[in-house]
Image (cartoon, rainbow, N blue to C red):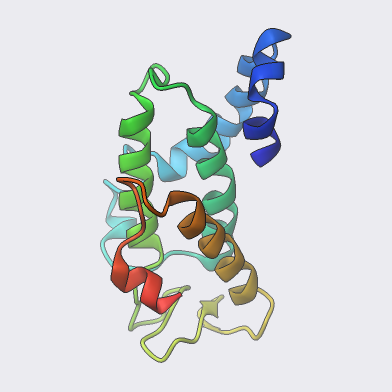
Amino acid sequence: GFTIVALRAELQAAGLLDDVMAPLDVWTGSFANGSYLLDSPFMDRPGFNSDLTRVLLHDRLAYVLALDTQGDDRGTQAAHFGAFLRWVTKALGLNTGQGNTFKPDGVCYAHQFHYGNAYGIYLLREAARAAYLLHRTPYALPADLLGRL
């Protein structure tokens, strides 16, 4: 994930950047790029699987950060950031039903019930990292979401 961001120039100079970016895009793009999951009935309600959200917060953000401003064949880096922000806002939304994310009382669900520290703490860690990396940018997480974190 973020190793690609840190070593981007070296990977590009060695001709390896596309080789390491492609698998990351294939894995994360189908879930968090806005053209699949956001447009599906699966995301009609706020909240998303806490474990998958944790992984995508890390890996998709790393992919988008590692893009140059021209982006890829599906859009500019700015377009990917916009899709990421829409996805993360929906994925970390409050779910009042049996969904697998934050509840109004602050508890984080996994597997449709409170699952102790197995998922929520790691989801919070990745969400906090994303919040930090994106603050003071046009893609900063919304204030209500930050308050929930």
